[in-house]
Image (cartoon, rainbow, N blue to C red; front, side):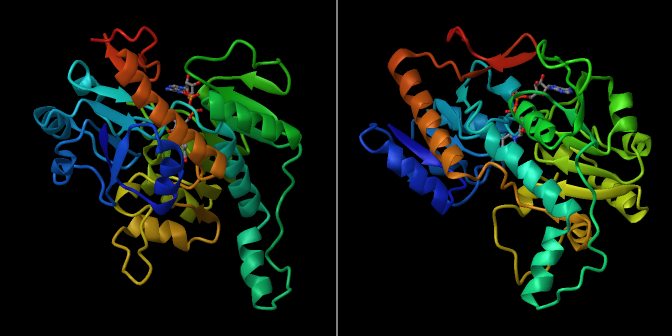
Length: 344
Ligand code: NAI
């Protein structure tokens, strides 16, 4: 089997080649992202392997089908970049539902601690032999309230980490877990209460029509002055313009962003030496209380190995049995993983 592998980075190639040997799958690696202009690179392939910033819209799906490409293997969990409704019945789409919730949750805490204890500033100061502590005062996490939106795999690991720091948890989820709320240190609440009572808010829900810009001018106004926002989920959960305004007005105390709404134009690439065309991103990065990492939260050895293993397993299972539990189905307005394997 032959797969066109888009948006390849050296670490992807390394982890996939380590596992693909003897699998019968040959990956043809392309650095370019998949979109309408590059889709023809998949000519002669059985499938494509894509990541978070590849474009899998109707035009791309149509062209893949015309070329006889029958599989889209996502090497990520989120699938907001795939028109799953359009793909249904035309092409098979698999994903990697979990590869390391620890990687993302630990990165969220790393960003939070860096931000509130000014580690990013201290690192630069001491390299310059500046040992002054002026303007470095942080605050304890112990006893603070963290609001978690989305209590799935990553959200729950982040809750465990926060509880380890002695924080209280206010949680919101469209589908609350039955075993999480203990009526004391971890409580499910409505979003209004979460916004009004949290010192720190961390986003761990998927990007959907409902969650698009869940952090916006109105919801930020409901938050405590000085709130710290963490987004390791998807950029478009946050209205970046509203966030920038709230940072300028000092209403938001700090922001830790691993994702950004327009990240596909910039993230994963080296733009040093170039003029950054996105004024909002440039302004956010210029703020002393904003930390931006470029969709890095997943990037651990363990996660990369799990991604390669599950992606290859998805492809092999489907080609051998015609079924794959990680196939994404869109049935009657509901998107879900295909448990029956009889989608079409
Ligand atoms: P999950 O599917 O285990 O959990 C998502 C949770 O969000 C579920 O409990 C679900 O009920 C909840 N949810 C769905 N709609 C909601 C709504 N409208 N309001 C509130 N909650 C809602 O997913 P997991 O593995 O925890 O991942 C969470 C997100 O993290 C993914 O959707 C993805 O966007 C992001 N992610 C980011 C990575 C990075 O490198 N920065 C890597 C992996 C995932």
